[in-house]
Length: 154
Length: 62
Ligand code: FES
Ligand SMILES: [Fe+2]
Image (cartoon, rainbow over all chains, first blue to last red):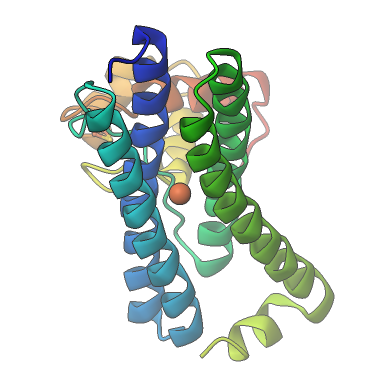
């Protein structure tokens, strides 16, 4: 089943962002682990694996549409130097990801590619859930103080 | 945060370098001194942004 060439490039751009997410979250997870923040490690690790599954779905979809998934392209990683900075960087990352997905969903809708749209909607849901968790962490940091927050994440 | 992932160079290192040169550094000079921007080059636009921001805000201590 052949896809319109702009759908292919839309899906590939989303794929680039998913691949970037795998690495950013994986590195943050292991930095958290190295600092001793086990629960932040687990959370970021899970997100990284989720991104890998999302990327997998995109790859299969692009192949089904007879395109070539671009696994060579990677975006700029946003890596923090401290736990709070890591969370901030992830927030920036997820926000731009959500913006991109919303646009991509609109594009698929217009191209009447409803299956790709559904797939992107799932990725958007993952992104929104993680952004919500990040917002909760920032709220906790602001209200209980960084020290207390980090103490609770060991 | 880390601006240059390839060489592990942080935003505060770049800001410090820029303020030591009175905000007159170019991206190339910063890259020469700190070693950033020499591998994949993906950080160069961020480095440029930091230089510009430090230049307009010369009281930046970090
Ligand atoms: S991130 Fe700076 S050269 Fe690659
Ligand atoms: Fe994802």
